[in-house]
Amino acid sequence: MNSFENKKLESLIAEAQGFISSDKYEKAIEILDEALKMEPKDLAALYGKGLSLNELGKYYEALVILDQVLIIDPKNTYALNSQAFALHKLNRHNAALDILERALKINPNDKATRENYEKESWEIARLVAKEFMYPDKKDKANDAKNK
Image 1 (cartoon, rainbow, N blue to C red):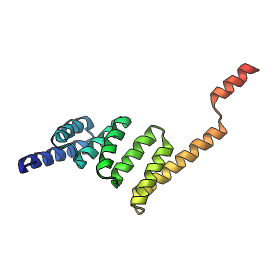
Image 2 (image 1 turned 60 degrees about the horizontal axis):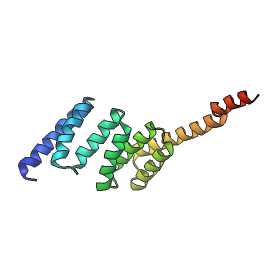
Image 3 (image 1 turned 90 degrees about the horizontal axis):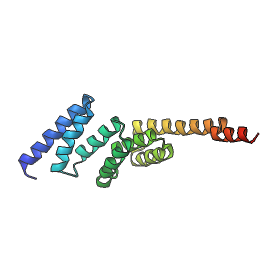
Image 4 (image 1 turned 60 degrees about the vertical axis):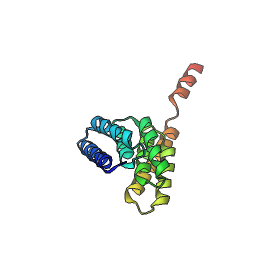
């Protein structure tokens, strides 16, 4: 990539970051897609797109993009936290916890990751307690039919 293309790429990413800051995620993705056509492995563009997809509730798509970030940079704790967020929203709490544990191994002092880990742990505990206290409604319906 020549210096003109590099400046164009930097300009696109800066523009997309402005849209992300303004909660205009669709526009950010449009710009980031243009940047990714120029440089498909640009970490800032990939991460920005994954973050934007998460914010739009497109969690499966976000996971795919964030996987691309982690292929390039396996120790990217921002991408790991974003993946955990998507997994949490998809009610895949154990998987989210595993991802957060991986991020904590990379940076045990990361306050945000530690807080996310604790929240996810509590969510799992809450769900287990709820399941114990309120068994599946299907079982209750079957019991009622059999009486």
